[in-house]
Structure formats: structure tokens, C-alpha cells
Length: 134
Ligand code: GCU
Ligand code: CA
Ligand code: CA
Image (cartoon, rainbow, N blue to C red):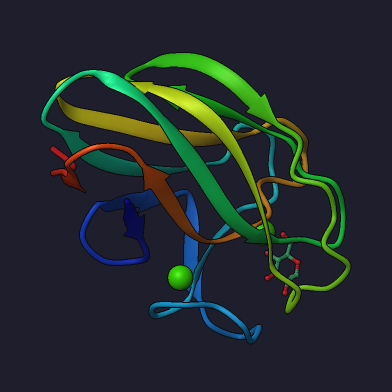
């Protein structure tokens, strides 16, 4: 199991890393611009191909569905319903296919509000390490 905060394995946010709402882990959370298609990107290294559970810890005051893209292919959508406050954090998860080697994972906003604030992702699989962003 690998949790990626704002350090190793965190590749980019179309927005900023903020820390003005409490309850986050690591050094803050990713705050995307409020626009359709805004994304955050991560890199995870797996030593063999397998399915893993991707857990997203987030906060938002409105529903903020996101497509999950793995290695350039959208593999599903997570609904990411409102958590009630910017300081109330919940998790949603889905199973994602990982290939052997580097896996680029992107969350892509499906509304004009952008993504929720994203604290971290946790990937539960076998022999996972943070990947490089390239
Ligand atoms: C507020 C909040 C931000 C959040 C933004 C949003 O500005 O302080 O943390 O990202 O709303 O609606 O996405
Ligand atoms: Ca935002
Ligand atoms: Ca964090």
C-alpha cells in the first residue's frame, strides 16, 4: 500500500498546493483551478501488472465527479460527493489496472467547478513505490 501526498509520486496539479483548510496530511492538498478538465497527476511504480484499489482523500462543498485516467486511458469515474466543508475529508475508491513499471494516474474534473481539494491518494496493491513523473 502506497500513500502519495505532495512529495514523491506527486507529479502536478493544474492549480496550487494549499494548506488553508485543516485536516490534511502531508504538506497540504492539491487545489485545482475551478474548470472542466482540470487535473492532478501522480506516478506509481508496480513491479508486475495487477489490479489495485485507488483511494482518493478529498474535500468539497459541492459534488465534483472526476474521470480516472491510467496510462492515458480513462478507466472509470468517481462521483466524489460533497463532504460538507472544506475541512471535512472523505474517501472514495475504485479499482484500477496497473501495468508493470511506471503508471501515470490522473484525476480529471468533470464539472466546471474543477476537482475537489485532493489531500492524497492511497493505492493498495503489490510492491508499489512512487514513480517518476517524466
Ligand atoms: C474555495 C476553497 C478552495 C477550493 C475552492 C473550490 O475557494 O477555499 O480550497 O478549492 O473553493 O471551489 O474549488
Ligand atoms: Ca479549486
Ligand atoms: Ca496532503
